[in-house]
Image (cartoon, rainbow, N blue to C red; front, top):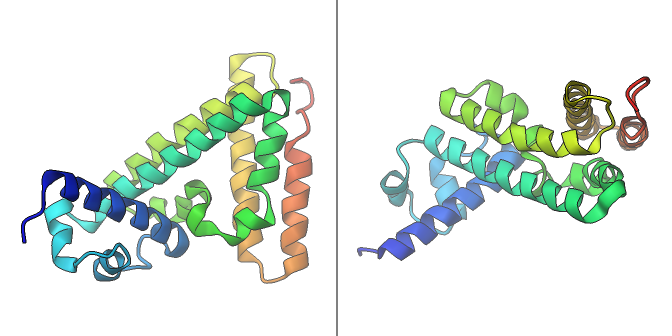
Length: 194
């Protein structure tokens, strides 16, 4: 049965959204095309009418997840004013975020996987990372644009690293301790830059 252009676009959007969540939860190689399409409520045969390859979908799903997360960060920065950095840290370094990778930050969930992917997924990841740095660059202290850029890079690296570690350990108390330490330390101004 032939589908309309509108339905085809809706199907593609649904596959990208489902893939975005499943890749964050299981990794790029943690789910096959057939299972992914089943989760989207579509047949496996429809995949190649929508995407050139699984790598093509991985790149699009990564770009989608990064864009949605960066928009959320931007909204937080706009609405929380002087408390925006603390709000981002509290939300990002929370047990809820730690426990729900499928709905969480694609940087922490896909960073290691992206490094092992081909050019399309890595390029999407790289492009998607920049808006996060721009948001943080407006929120972190620093006397110059260069100082704020360095602080944004260090803050994002600390946030992602802490979340990855908190998810990786099997000791709940240690996991909580990692999140709390990062929330506290990353919220302090760097010496000489405030």
